[in-house]
Length: 327
Ligand code: PUT
Picture (cartoon, helix red, strand yellow):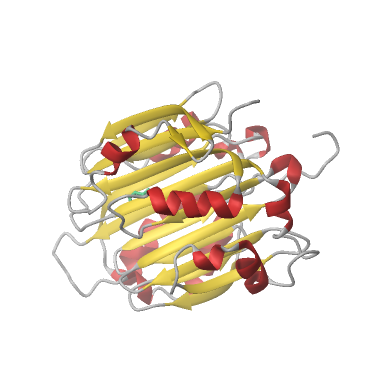
């Protein structure tokens, strides 16, 4: 909208799995020191706000979203005009030098279409440019677009020969056209800090028992990471400004059916529109999710506008989009 400050809440999301060609079990990404992460994040144009650890996963809340690190998996999610893909080469070099991992087992780069792509760094102004950049590093990349290319869509770059064998699943709900009264909770005028916003919004009840690190920005905006034992996380980011409202929810908590989780997240945020992606590999208890979602034409007052299913080499991937009906 004319004259109003615009913030691109839509994140760029990178997940990289590392392995060692000589099966060196001592490799561990968590030995990377904070100063090295800070250098990497400087390339991305964001900073660490806080750190928390659990049994097998380290979590960082960033000035623009979040980072998670386990023994062999790295996740970086960044919003605004950050330059995430610039850091991929540096990441691979850092991981090789410090941890000894010499192979990328799989990589996932994804994002929804930006609202204002022209405000992004050149590299991120179109998915084609992002793919060109990644193709310079990977000879075996596969690029997809799901949804409507002239409306809302979601892009994915992954490897055609990815080799992650351990049970794995990732669920993402990306929401926009948000309910104003729900968004007010994520302002300093309404909530005094991150903890207060987590409680006032009901985020604390989405997955009970989770260890939470939350942050409420000045004058508005919210980020939280949550950790559960066993390397499970949730992460939520809220851009509450009415003219560019956007919320993302992501988790790798395994669920045989995601319907209850979807219901809880929608109840907390009440978006006008949302898209959902679910990745699950063969070893995951979520591997049949696509069969359940296939029949979900409506969810609690929302109507499905798009639904697609992909069978990737190692993962089943479901993409689906819902909106409130226009009355
Ligand atoms: N964000 C991509 C997730 C892939 C499976 N863990």
